[in-house]
Image 1 (cartoon, helix red, strand yellow):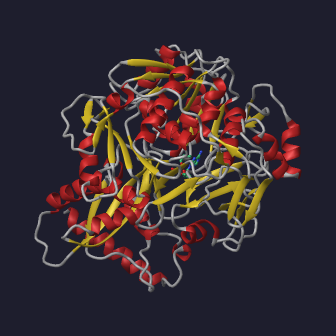
Image 2 (image 1 turned 90 degrees about the vertical axis):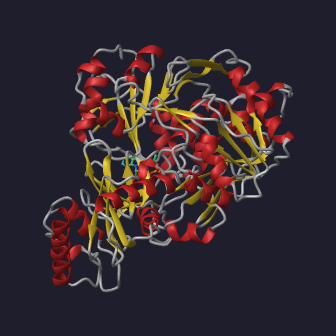
Image 3 (image 1 turned 135 degrees about the vertical axis):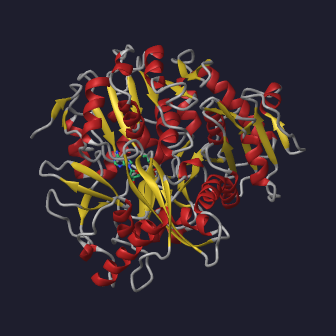
Length: 638
Ligand code: PRX
């Protein structure tokens, strides 16, 4: 086997053997690493597509991340927080425990009960994990919304979850600017009577309007008891809803449970990062995304690890910020994205080489395919050829890692660009349209053939959609929507999305959501968006727009208006790189837009293999649509 042979000397082959022969007993053994109030009666209740793990067991996520460390690790730093403006804070396990209990009492005093939903719209400050863990402590369901989302985007999420409390901040720092979060929330909730209170953390001290519903975090925390016993919650009690984009216009509320989710995270965090008590872990993800939930909040804290939490943009004040943080806090494990690496790589090796990165011993990548050149750069320039790289494939829905090298478990030969093997206990295949395994080295659809503990419970309020989106393409198999291939060594290579979901800087953006935003502009008749390869972001957005007849506005003005609309309705991350105004969109006879064709045009490719395009589209039809589209693009650009 060709590859880079590197591991940390661990080799627990027994685990894989046990997992392969009986995955249920295997996961049961892993669950015993957590602290349960009462043990389960049944390890797995599987009535496809609904899995309930550790049925009858009671547990609490806040208890498992905080209370259990109070005896031996109370004074150990849990979070080393670095503000974008250079401020810093250290919170020990005791500090976190005290604050979480106090804030849980605040929530209770406001009438929050088990099962209530709480919206958290905060920047990357310690109050964010504190809020999440306080919710978990009393059985409230947290719904974190990425602080880069606009008022219109969060409005849908608040409405869908019917949350009664919102936790936000006056503002947040982003590239030196203040993002006025409280203003965004005021706009988003103005029509909602069901919101009872808005709790405001004062982070930037910018001026805000306070209504009778609004309360200040510091005042609420002032005179409140610091003792709040963790609720004994059913293993399947919902821990959180996290909204994610899919192929429909409406974001889906992925619902995660407690006992199974924590088991998955405890295990993968240990196996993937080989965590030791002395480690300083740094995951650069924002907690607004699933990576932050699983591997900034729950995974590291379950293990009593010390971690760095960084507030701002990785390129502020310049692209060396991440390297500077590693040097400052003597980080040993870095978990970041290919986009962040590509951005840094563009500025050459001198920048990272000018920092002391010698404390690093393990490197991780997540969120999008990592190209082999970037992998090799990461290995050589950042890891100095001594750190294993784990390329971890997973999704919001899977809860935790699904495919990854596991240096904490076994020595494995790494191949740049491959995620390597599934985690133990998982049966993952690459199949064709009909569900048959494809031969080695053949591109197909990734499927997961058995349930796993971190899997989503369902989509919030929509079991039917859950069934339809993930379980209808193949019988009793979970369909993640990714292309992959498996090589002759059984290694998986992830090849991007097979559906209409874009991955821009590792963020998931649904084409339908974006298109419906664009067509809601009064001058637009139709729109189609697609992704094109981007040197830094992995993928960038291109939008094709057909205007209504008799629209006389200048293309440049319209382009600007549409960009503003997208920023307002969704957020800056969804802004297209380019907007093309065209006279018609190429469609199949059944009216489906031929996205691959658009992609080809946007990439200046000739459309070679039209045979693989959607059914019902005659080759000549496609060719003439293609020619017309090119002509109209040409016409507009002249
Ligand atoms: O397409 C895959 C890609 O990200 C999708 C999941 O996105 P999200 O739910 O936002 O979660 C991202 C963080 C886990 C997947 O369907 N993806 C994620 N990790 C990788 C990846 N693609 C290739 N390689 C990865 N390591």
